[in-house]
View (tube, rainbow, N blue to C red):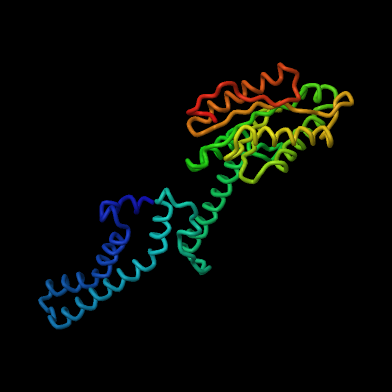
Length: 291
């Protein structure tokens, strides 16, 4: 490391030319010695001197080409690491055979580190956007999926859903039963909605659905069908009665989705105040933000 730092003033932006400069000087030491001996003795054979000079320069040129070829994998690796927009080092850098030298070991080590880092990033991304209990998107993941939609698809209907009397489920049946109810309810929502719809756990016992390209009537019918199935094939019972849910709806026609979600949330709380186990729609939505 000290020698590397000490020689950094020689071609500071090119390791290849720095190595060539060092090779050029060292390979010309015999020639310099011959010149010194000839100057001291006065016996320089100019023909031999010319041949020796040309041979030395040819050797230095060959050393430059060889060093450049040996350093190509390092440069390719450095370029791949330097590009911040590259998603996968394994697809951007060349593959080296297992020859066992230092460059091969360095290359393999960086590949392993890049693969491990990519796996950790993927795991963190999943953890940040997925609810670990139900396996569906969490609030951040739900909003991220909506933000990723192209403009023509940013229209439909948003529903905020709350499992009725869920605290009593935990209090009377236990938290394990409560977790099972949450998992089963998420599975019920997933099985009763379309692939284009977005489902997420909004928090606690609340869930969110975005019905893409749907009007409030269509979203209401879908939720009513799920509610009826919850009564006919309950995911659990409380006091001998099927566990039900309340929901609030609001159309969304582009613009900030948080405004539509807020209106749907207000409709949800109105449904709960009116006795639960029902679906309410947002009151007087703005024509610019909601349907």
